[in-house]
Image 1 (cartoon, rainbow, N blue to C red):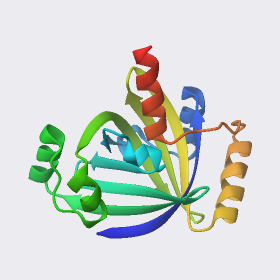
Image 2 (image 1 turned 180 degrees about the horizontal axis):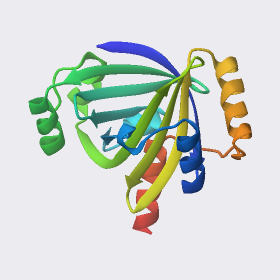
Image 3 (image 1 turned 180 degrees about the vertical axis):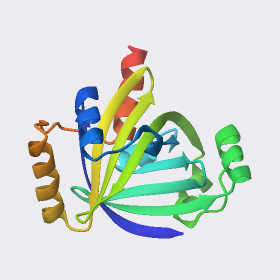
Image 4 (image 1 turned 90 degrees about the vertical axis):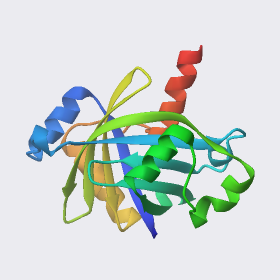
Length: 191
């Protein structure tokens, strides 16, 4: 199991801004890799009510179960464990999870169900200041574009991120996490 603090900044982009940033960093179409995130919660929304997120991420070369817990603004604690393809299939088909210490107590009393998924085409770029991600996501009749920046220091990371947006004339937009955007999109479909 891997546990780490994640410091991240994110901003939604228009399709044109997304293309402009991709071109600026010389990111080619074949550098975008597809991943699918399946989001789980209890019937009484334990994770949502505690501002946490629990997901299965399926990539070409691995499958990750991750619990994200907020520490403070822009900082999350992330606990991740890799699961096999067989375990992945059972999770997706039956919502049965392998023994994982960080969710064991929750699952023992409250079964989890998948409430939605997001397919993301993601490019990742390592920079001196941190890691930049460009995401093109599809979910619940929504298509969105996002820039995300992960770093080791909140102040320095925020300076870099704001400067990057300013340099490319991209307005700062209040940007929810993907899981929150998925829930909003699903709720808008319900009426």
